[in-house]
Length: 403
Image 1 (tube, rainbow, N blue to C red):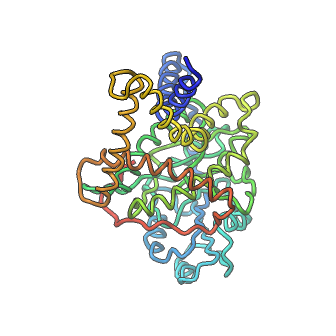
Image 2 (cartoon, rainbow, N blue to C red):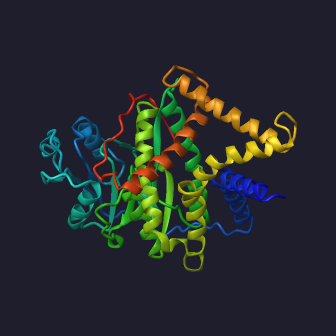
Image 3 (spheres, helix red, strand yellow):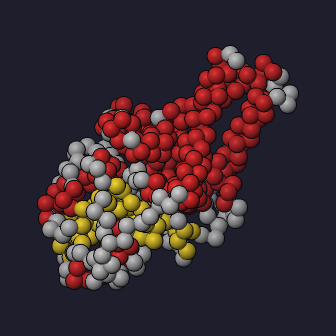
């Protein structure tokens, strides 16, 4: 084989492994572990119900306050064991004043807006419960969310628990809603298998919890606070577990433009995290955690988008060498790529049009996901991604949440 062919197959393998191969490998490993009886769950004290702090770092969330506070007060967990702590630094829409009308809600506020992680660093000094649960101001928690999260902390090896992010689904979704919803369904399954193997690699900021004693103050310019906080807990020798029955629901991005905005800042934060968590790449020290981290996160934020870009010209040259219209392996793969990107173009054309075949939006969403990595890299290198993110606009709420 020529050097070009070797590079082509390496690139194709990395792309396949990042999005499908790792999931297939995880599934196989989990099946074998179950057959060997290695998947025993820790039971612990069934009556374990510690006090928890529901921590919300909010910026100008006035429109969501009533729903969020009322939702928190209706959760199926002893209300005398739930403390609500809101840090509203920088909010100028009346958020702190509106929160103060509620009993049992503690509000910390400073006029300066220094970003979410600065608010979290400041607020954690006021947390005096053994478990702190982080949630966003614009999300609705499932009735049993706290109960399901706390249950996993019965195992002393668990340092962090991630809930599940769910997206409101419509009968006929726009590209952003359909693509985001399907993506999170797949991610949810991977997280279940990751947790069963050893540990989830990163928590979702919409809903996750840690043992308060494991809190480590995070750098003020951190872009992915939830990811850094949870992975550093895992690097301390604890595991991150996952319970999809503990869920937080939010609306999908209003359109793909808004979703791209969100993905770009996540990609910039992902690249920053890869640099700052460099020790986690050491298989000899972190073993299974390193394997999961590289397979599930690092490749998607680094090599995979680059190989997707390079695969097109490499494939074109190889297809031309064997005959572009021949039925050789390289020509088939090339035209397969072209069909995929044509489907992405069709998704762009159909964006925000009412359609029931949601799968048509998947190639478009996949393209946007990988485009965001390049845009995020540019922002990261320029240092232009501020911690004071502009929240993506969300679509209207529908009746049915999906994973």
